[in-house]
Length: 186
Image (tube, rainbow, N blue to C red; front, side):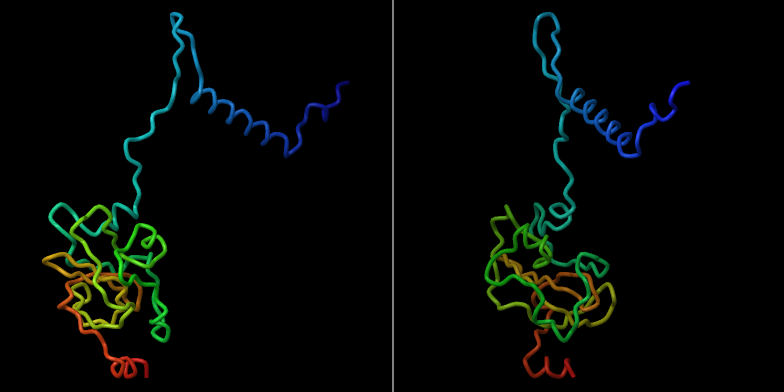
């Protein structure tokens, strides 16, 4: 009588064997050579022309006509709510244009790489300000984290205290004085 347990695989060995088979098939299908009429040909899997990157495509702050002047994204989950007591600890960009890395780090909303007309606007940030929200149809207290200008426009990027972000023209903002900030805090 045959030993039934001799053919049984352990719980660990079976998945390992399956993994080895899958890896072997992947390697063979992606990196094999064949001899066809004496000519060595290499078979590869073509990469897509452009890989979709949600940060670079959704956070680019310009198009062929110029910088985006107004945008309102209160439901942008990449920007969490801000505790008003610590608003001045909000990451922001001062004295330079935001980069792609700044977007990923939550320091900026849009980036302007490749847009030669964009320049930084020199104001120490973050700043508390009031802006009228078209989305919420009311004036909101926000934290300004970036300001970018061209020869014709100056656009302010901000974060809502309740989460999300937006942007609007510089003239749409009332930047709070130290006295006004104290009133907001208490």
